[in-house]
Length: 116
Image (cartoon, rainbow, N blue to C red; front, side, top):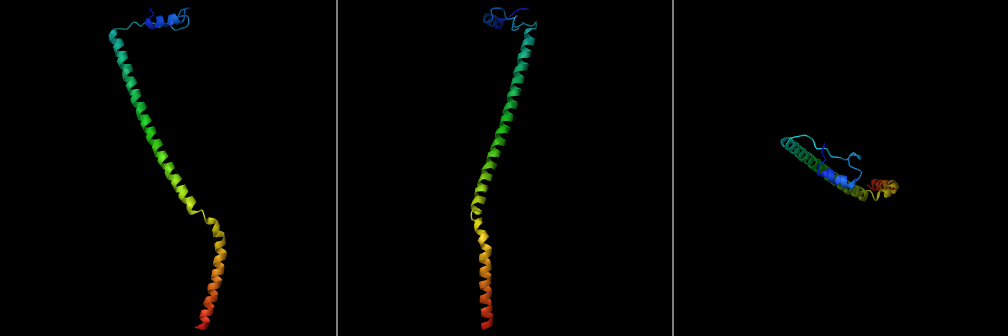
């Protein structure tokens, strides 16, 4: 087992020895072509993960935009409903006014029917 350059940097940090702390880096017995294959594979996986992250973030961004648009439309509609119902408190007196108007109209109708 041979400690590589990264292990030397760790050894300088931990004078008691990196292996005591479980930090020693062991050089594996692999060929250069295997090392290249591992590097290419890991690079490829990194690119795939990056693409997946970009796609997921794009989907999230579009969903957030749709939510924002719908919230704005809901807020606009709520303001319109509020302005349309701002005077509904006056409807309580409408029935009494209509009763008086009806009575008055019946009086006029009665008067006009007697004259003709």
